[in-house]
Amino acid sequence: MGGFEASTHVDRSHRRQDYVRLTEHDRFVREDYERARSIGMRVIREDLRWHLCEGDWRKSEYDFSSFAPFVEAAQAAGISH
View 1 (cartoon, rainbow, N blue to C red):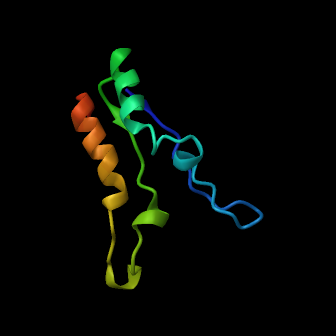
View 2 (spheres, rainbow, N blue to C red):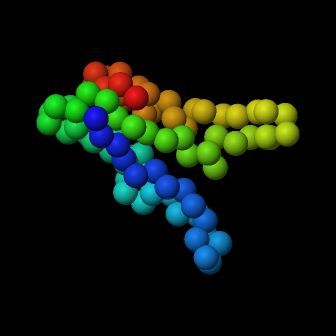
């Protein structure tokens, strides 16, 4: 089992620090999963980046489409979340 850093905090200067973007895991998720699988990992912990998923929280509207590439890459690599 493994995981990727997914912190999305807002720092002291009020800037969001999205570590999935900063580490380019969102860009290289397929390659990351393939490398993980090549060393025997079969389960990867991922986190939702809530700032990308939250729509109108008052209406309980959420958009999880930003997570779809991670699900697709995991399925292609034979990785479970």
